[in-house]
Amino acid sequence: MGSGGIGSSWDGTLSVSEFRAAAVAFADRWRISGSSLPPWSWVPVDEQHRWLSRQVDGFLSMENVCMMRSAGDRDAAAEEMGPCGLDEPVDVATLVPRGGSDSDVNRCDLNIIYSHSYRLPVLYFRVYSSDGQPLALCDFERHLPSDSVEAIVGSKWTFITQEEHPYLKRPWYKLHPCGTSEWVKLLLLSDTSVATRDDAVDLYLLSWFSVVGRVIGVSIPFETTRSLD
Amino acid sequence: MEDAQQLVWRGAIPLQIHLHESEVTTLPPPPPVHILAPRIGYLPLLVPQIKPHFDNALPPGVDTVWFDYKGLPLKWFIPTGVLFDLLCPEPERPWNLTVHFRGYPANLLLPWEGEDSIKWSFINDLKEAAYIINGNCKSVMNMSQADQHDLWHSVLNGDLETYLLVSTKLRLGMEEGHTVNLDSMSRKQENEISGQVKSGKIPIRLYVRCVTENFDDLDEVPRLDNWDRLHYINQPVEILQEEGKYFSMEDAIGTLLPEVFVKNTVSEEVADGAEGEEQKEAGKDSRRREPRVCLGGAAELKLLRVQGIEPQLDIPFSWVASNLVHPERFLHVCALIRADRENTA
Image (tube, rainbow over all chains, first blue to last red; front, side, top):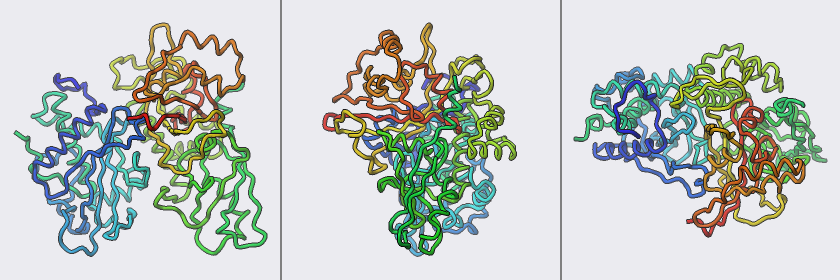
């Protein structure tokens, strides 16, 4: 929104138009980083939604990501969720690009959708087997990082729940956004390259996804954590 | 005058529930069950009452209960009253639903894992509402187990008194005097405003159904045969105060559906003389909007329903928000729109 300095007045949320700007910036960074994961693309919302959408004309989507390794391999990389991860080189993702043996390979679609209620991006995802069958959480849990599994066990109904995809109207998993604004704000305000609100918008989804992606075992490519110029 | 909130909590829909023919194993087939379903309740919660009637007719197997209306599988997380308002523009009484105990359409409907599914859907919605109203969900997150239990059971039992007792602690604008915290986002840090909900953000779940067919009477509205034709979203509305004016239902609709032409006569068409003529006239002129000219043809609001009521457009929105709200603190607004598909770019 404004290009003024950013300070304690910012509460860590985004307006609709800022979300769109943040999505474009994030998808660009991701692409330029040469990530081995698929690109993020902007999915325009069905024309029928236009009565509802109010300036949100779509969401970010990354499709057909392979999940391979089991939780056991991930223990070394398991880290606390929190604002400390950004400066460190990121571990190789649990989710890897296609290739390798296809048996026991589950695929995953990720969508980043703006919530008008929380004024935040929210992660929705679904997992399906190699033959296209949707999988339930209990079927793919073992592919998730161990700390996520703990959180799922500890807060079955408030951490990851199955909900309707706001636009596709089918059951997807949703990562609950409570508390997001607080830690995103911490992440961004502690980043010395963030001087203005525009800077914060620019880096918003990168910071956000560095934490949120890890919950389901996908880490951001190391290169994208560096500024583009 | 009876408290509107009490009326809402006592509101019920007479259901006539049939067992789906594919699950009938007895002759003659079991007769339908008649049941009064609370508007603020959820269909699967009726199963303990329904099941005994059909138990003997069912084929062997494990129960996975779901309902349909004329073939459309019903979403369990939408309150029963809202389903009725969405699917029956012309109210059908009793409402004929079909129950299935087998063959859950898992690709279409969210899985049903028993009462916990709806309880947590309720609490997560409540959290979202709290975030909209207060800028955080702490009051809901920090609710004690006992309060959580009491709150949920007050909804199950339609016990408004207990509900008010517990929900007051959540500071969601329900307490005595309807105090409301201004959203922490807004620049006007006036903190609290007493009296009726005057200001602040109202959690709304807006359902929009758009039809292209022309119709004069509500019984001519084509049946909804596919959820893809109905759109809904959680969308807060901020009550904006202007000097000397109140924020009306029409203002709220203007915010929610800015491109839809709201005919001044909507309330006359549907209210059908239920209200005094003078009342309608009085409200009309001062608040008349210029007809919105829509790009590429008109989209017109044909029907607006909240809690089974077609609220007059000049009613103060704060009244609607305080009185017709659901227990999870969302106001469920059902809008039926007619638009010329061909003309929309």
